[in-house]
Amino acid sequence: MKLMIESDVQVVSVNMEANAIVLSYEGDVGKYGHVFFTHTLVPSDQEESKGHFSGFARTILTDGGSVRGTLAGVWQRNGSAFRIHSLDDAIGLPDQNYVDIQVDILSKTGSLKLYTLNED
Figure 1 (cartoon, one colour):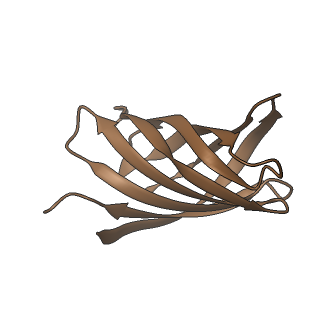
Figure 2 (tube, rainbow, N blue to C red):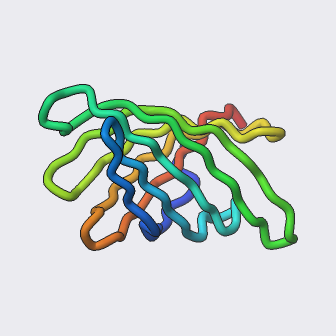
Figure 3 (cartoon, helix red, strand yellow):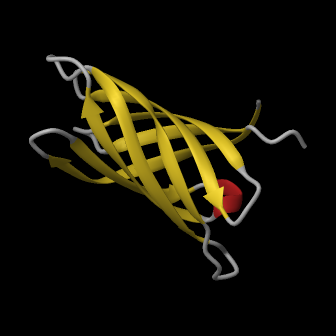
């Protein structure tokens, strides 16, 4: 794995559902342009302090193009702070990435580190 991008993101919405927390974000993420993405966090314990998630991303590139991607992984929560470990697969591109995301739902701020899983 090679670190490719470090970026800040903004939490644009937090939706509490009976069996999940849905977080939506946006931010400028290097070569992917402006990225909009969502995680549906499903707890695996009574304290709702950890679990798994699925998600989706769509980007707007600087040339006006777009990239889509599927997201999946695990998460942990400490108070209002979440740490999310995501495996991302870009649709129509060879890119597969591991993304380490830290976000606080009260301040609605976050950061990410994107590592490529590609060999090149």
